[in-house]
Image 1: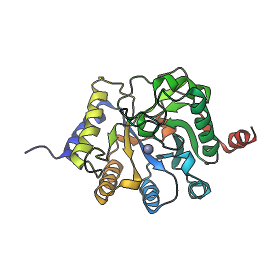
Image 2: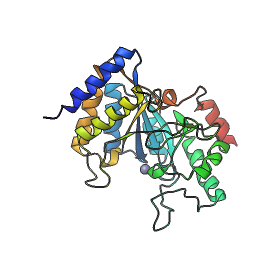
Image 3: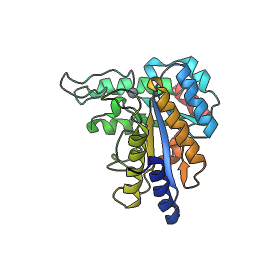
Image 4: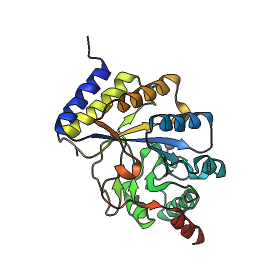
Length: 270
Ligand SMILES: [Zn+2]
């Protein structure tokens, strides 16, 4: 009989405890736009378990309602999720809002529009989350030019700084089975993905200081997904080796470009 996946996670974390370093995690949820019951459920979960949440917001689809809902909510960090979440890839290409075929001018306009909208959110980090986790790397210099501190995609980061001035903070564990049921991947698969990333970090196969990133999409969660998240967060509350970081804390390197209210006003005056 195969090992219970929760026991496997516990066993791996015991090895981390022996090494004396916390197993760091961070959490990103995508596709926020408007206040909805699933979004309320999501933020309630974050609050109940005191887990910092990076909420990837689609600028062209959001507005004052979400700004108001998140006002003063310190455990949620707003990050920019593309511009309109539109697919501009060719018919034979994977979905992408910013393929290389789009001109730099169009891209600059979309990204800057998005930044202006995102500047209205209280607790914001200039971390760019491209829709479908894809952005042609030839566009990376533009992100730096526009003042983004980091980029967040999916999978082990190939570099902590893929472009000078731009840090990479990826997610590694997707709880949704997009290619099949579009429901929960199942706790064994989710926990295996967590364990696999932790093992690679511990053994030095990838950088050990890259936090393990949980990726969720509140609008499509079924009950099983919500149950798993509660169980994972409950488990982590009882495990001193697991440490959840905010996106700002998880971003590699030192300077974190957190836009304060003062800076926000400055942006809006420009
Ligand atoms: Zn998305």
